[in-house]
Length: 249
Image (tube, rainbow, N blue to C red; front, side, top):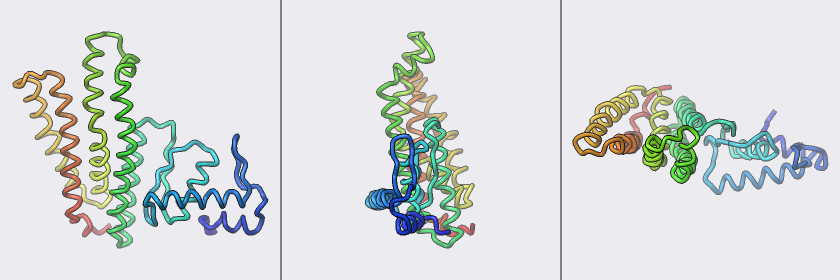
């Protein structure tokens, strides 16, 4: 059975027959096909094409089913993201989806498709984490207040949350890119990146900012943000070199 073509076939055979429904919407086969076509056109305008991965973060509603068939219609793969997941859990799922597609694309001899998928997954992750980061920056105080009422502790925690969250846009790309190397079968590059950035760079930087430069905890928080941003930059540069494309998967 050709699932992407199922809405077309059902709409032709029985246009007024029931297709899908939830508590708020009830669509016939013809209405469902029209909704899928509109959603597919919207995805296409945003650059989604065959071989891409579309993350759908919706509850089990008509909108989810429409998005699913719209993605398949364009030849894209779908990774459903449970709305109940935390931001970190959702981020890891998006990262892993990009890594998986890299392996599949290289195995199929299509490195260009793999590269497009990684940059697109990075963009999706950047949008997602940027929204989360903005929320953490704006609502840092009430969020910290859920865990502690001690003024001194809360002040440091709020500062940490705001400084580290300000770099979420860069973290998003770094995480997707390092996962992509793993998907290509290159475990050496991300290992060296993590060793160099987090152990040889971040720890000395945190010490220098916190002690000799007398920034205290603020220096440590800045070091975290800088280190993740550097990881994203270096990962992007190495990924653009394209040596991972020669890997046999």
